[in-house]
Length: 104
Image 1 (cartoon, rainbow, N blue to C red):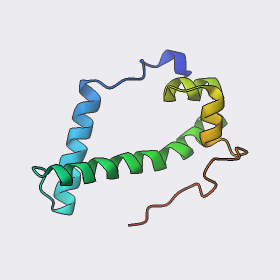
Image 2 (cartoon, one colour):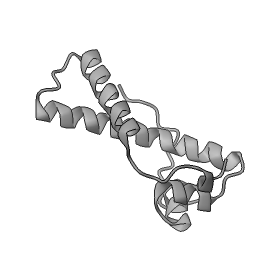
Image 3 (cartoon, rainbow, N blue to C red):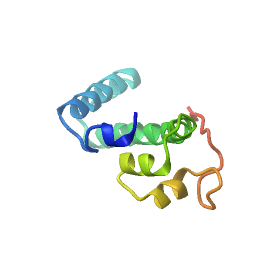
C-alpha cells in the first residue's frame, strides 16, 4: 500500500480511544493512579518514547517492502529529505543505535 491510499495523517476518535486504553492499561500494570496529572504526563511520555522506538524498524521494513522516502514523508508529515535525515541508514544525523531495545 502506498501513502496516498492511507487516511490523512491526523488523530480521531479511534486514536483517542487507543491511547486512552493504553494509558489505563499502563497505569494498571505499573500500579499508578491516572488521577494525578504528573502520573499522566509520565505515562504519556512513556508511550510516546516507545512509539518513537518502533518507527525506525517500521520505516526500514516499509522501504524494504517498496515504499520510498516520499511515502514515508507523507505519513510523517514532513519532507522526504527530513524523513531520510531522521531514519536513513546513511544519514549523518540519524541515531545509529537502531534497533533500540527497551531499557526497562
